[in-house]
Length: 122
Image 1: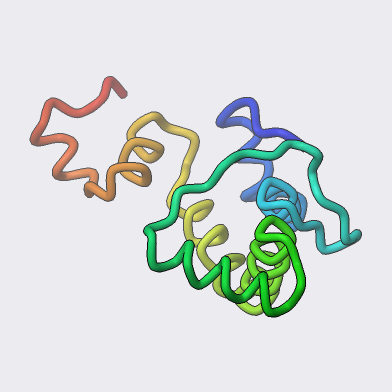
Image 2: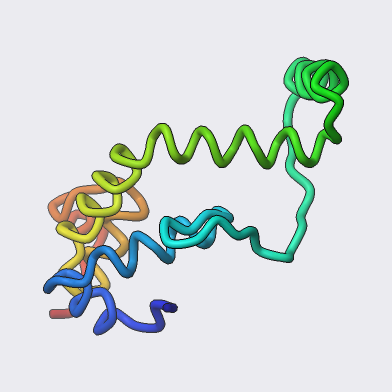
């Protein structure tokens, strides 16, 4: 499922949050319904100390760094699933389909702060 418009977000606010949450997990390479990984790979940037920890752990577990990071991210997401879902729900409750609510959510600014900067056409 993809979100192509604010209408999709409004529809999701009205009862199909679990579909959107599932799409978030899919984006991060997990799916609550299936344990599959997307086929796209991309480099990640970590500091030197973290890279060293990843390298050592992967070596002593006899895994590639890629496999180690994959397992670590999956485990982290699974262990924090409730927090992620709560964040998604909170974000959806703040969106009402308007440009102002979307900008407020992304910037962290209140409606009053946005109005002080010129606001949005109603």
